[in-house]
Image (tube, rainbow, N blue to C red; front, top):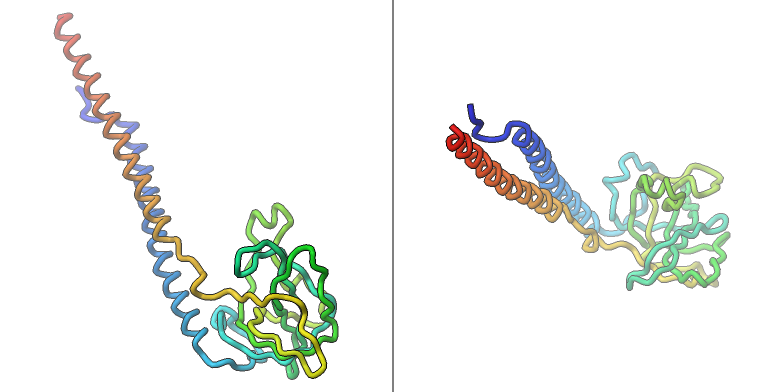
Length: 237
């Protein structure tokens, strides 16, 4: 009995199509989740500045909330590679802020400076910081593998617990007689956060379409060979 389609290749294509389409629909779900997340970030960023809560139980709920800290900075700064708002390569300056009335210390991203600049002296520096809240994020697999992970609470040697969020400075207002460090505050804006999941979904569905086209070409060729084999059998008989 002559088969209508080759069984094994058809099963393989069916499995691959199911996987590719599942990945496409998964990216669509991720797109909707990211849109909701960005909407919450936008809503937080429109609220009036307020002191950072003494206890942060849900760091993600405070993301991009504008806060005010009255800081006395402790210890040496921690430098982390990162770009400026104009895309120049350099490093961000993180320092620990001791805010009155808090049991923990808050890491503050004071801003960006070029690699060749020496780290500013932050120990004992007093200033009011106006900035946005950012939750700490875990290191990626590549960062762990290369040993070049971004700054985390473990990067600091603090005299107490480090808050589960950090603050990216928008304005640095030194106390009377003080001078702000020579950095360029460069907080991340919500508008700069991409939502690429739609394009990822299109890619997976495009791969599925290409697979179908390749399978169609293969099937057409297979059927032609099947007909040629049948014609040869008739001629030999």
